[in-house]
Length: 263
Image (cartoon, rainbow, N blue to C red; front, side, top):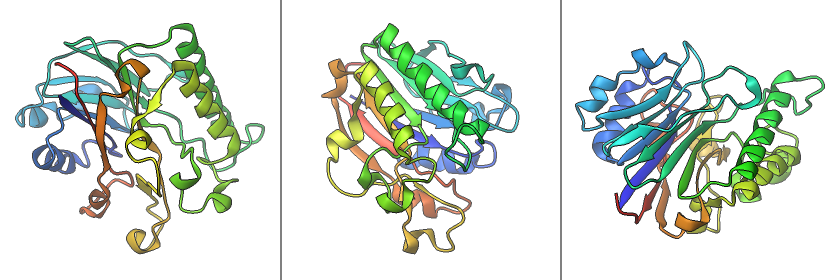
């Protein structure tokens, strides 16, 4: 059995202390981070290694994007892909000794206007998702886990108000359709919703809210998926809402799952 978590940290150096706190208190075997905003060589890996996370596979950029996989279990670099040719560090993969490949994604947010004709960032987001679909269709993954900030809340109960957010980037029908196509192409199972099939679930609350907890206008933007051959091994899904209340928090919180697989 191993545990896995995904977390958009919104600057791994700025929030190094929060990462260390999570590693001490929750001790996932594997922690996938997005929006690290750091070159790989400046990620504070020595501090994480001192807590037992000796292995790291990462792709970085100065000041924005960036993805990293920290692990207490041996992992090897399984590559990356520059989706949509953006030149961004938004994907990295690592392989466990049991052969399971973990893909860590940071899908573009897409800007504020859900129209690719007037908002280049929204078009980039749709192109990124389209390439994900095509890659999964061409080489259907097996024994794989996919996690990350996918920047889309696909279900009506993944947002605080479905009708109010239909024209808001992250919950528009075209985004949900594109994400669904990528999911279907890989046969991916949404492990979180397999375990928690009903009810409102959020992993992100805006910094703009004066009192995020009381307003509770959240969205489930962070996901853990698995291929059908190992999806039933996934369980114990949970979202650590209290982390949003830690001092100097990210606007995202960690999402967890356990997998009953030999490692």
